[in-house]
Image 1 (spheres, rainbow, N blue to C red):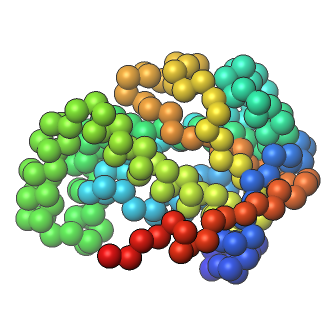
Image 2: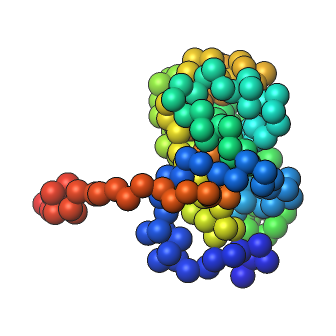
Length: 212
């Protein structure tokens, strides 16, 4: 078990998760543990393993002040959380494709000939995508990592709140990113909860599922 896991109960981690909006504002998460959680979150799957997710951890007063006017009605999370994790999708993610596949070969997880065949097919294919097609891919993949990060955070003893209400057209540039390349997907607040999240309801599976 990971040395920093406070909880390894799948049922409690998964079904006990709630969106928490108020945190202990004096609690800080170390960079070491934050990177560990992000590393664990990126075990999530991605299309042809291109891993298009990119993260900015806004933890300083300066960064949070920069974020405040962009997050609409989500200011409590920004003010009290240990950090706000900005999750972007990289529209040029395939530029790291060779590095990813070279690592797989170096670690004995893929033969060289398979690497060459895959890269030879994948990179031109990804380069042929329209902007909308790539946008769809990176948002789906980054959302998988975001969900995993929320669960990983609970295993480490923290709570989160996924935030979609923010100025998407301004976020990348506010944090010195190329807005044409980096598509904002989600913001996660993270920290030690000082209040429980609200109970919520879900529709029954038979209402939203059709068998054919």
